[in-house]
Picture 1 (cartoon, chains in turn yellow, blue):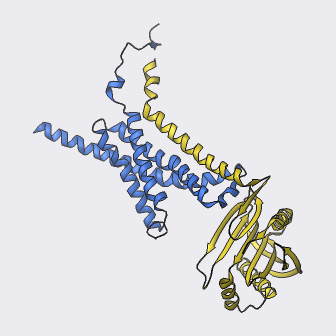
Picture 2 (cartoon, chains in turn blue, red; picture 1 turned 180 degrees about the vertical axis):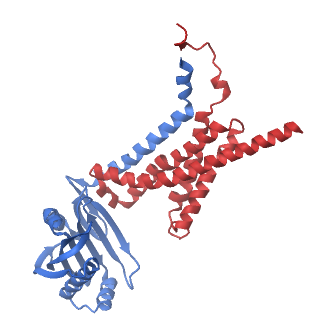
Picture 3 (tube, rainbow over the protein chains, first blue to last red; picture 1 turned 60 degrees about the horizontal axis):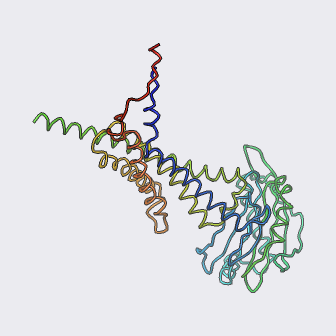
Length: 215
Length: 166
């Protein structure tokens, strides 16, 4: 067995060093950008999301997506979705402009906020029927709630055995909130597995109280 | 005549090794691109900062840089490492091949998968950066394993510990 200094010296070639430096540099730059972005929007354990459509605070450890839907029959809608990466609990905010609101209402034969709430509740229930044909819809509570200084209608409902995971059936709970202001429709949905939603209820209330719809 | 024939065979072998290096580059690029993207999200979840994804532009830039380093550069480096190990001459030209083959294979695969070919496809992330990364990585890998012969020649007598000599 031979131990040669030239072997070690040979391993540390400039191209290998350059490769390692580039690899580390790319990783650090990437995380630097993310950390800088995060630090510019952080408020405690929450991230402040603010754009032309809405402003709200959501937990920094939740998955978050936002998109603008231009593919509507008329107008456009802005959506933001927040989901816990560990449990099934989802919040979704959707803001329609005037043309999109009119188009959505006409297309689905809806006349007012209450009909929107009932329509979306039945849509979620129909989706859960795909998981289990014997799922049952139980309305728990209807009422009004303040969202972004507007009085909104809400409906809480339970879909018994409405969600299938790993061969087991779970209850789904859902809270659907909606209001129309200046002929622009705003929808907020909070849904997930019954137990998971119970755990994240406080988070939802915090997010909802911080929400400011801008259009 | 014999010398010419020998040179031709050598070049053919070099090209075959470069093509194999390209295959290594392509396979790794495909695997590492997926792994890097999943890995980045998993790291962000573990760090408790996955919410930063909502800021599309900074997240997209960070993702591209991360995938460039972890997937494109590394796959090119491995392809170049193999090629540099097998090929000793014409490195400047030969080492271009693994990166180009890797990128072309990757782009063709993306076209088949339908991720490219649409007007809103991410051509920077799926074509330009893989090309730059794999070609750069290929040269770095090739020269890392096959550094110039002059560098290998010791300028002085190396210190050697030989356990057979006692």
